[in-house]
Length: 123
Image (cartoon, rainbow, N blue to C red; front, side):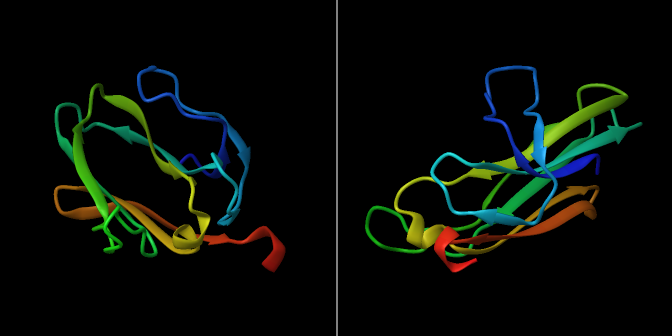
């Protein structure tokens, strides 16, 4: 893991990763704040990384708890940086709590971090 915490806004269409603003695991619940971590993967070109963001209980339009966000990506080079993160959006209330993020390579967790998203007035 290279860095973790709060980052500049991430553009998923860009090759550039967001820049670290603050190293922390405590994230104030502010609209559009970006948080997560960056890992450098070495020697795993063309292998699949699985990732998961297990959020505290974000609700869908029908009021049901959404499943954790997960997926996979392929390592693009022998030394590759990857950002795993999320942002806060309205309504803030269902974003408060623990966000557990992890990355697996060949069924082994190679990076993980838990963030606590809190209401700024409850610090």
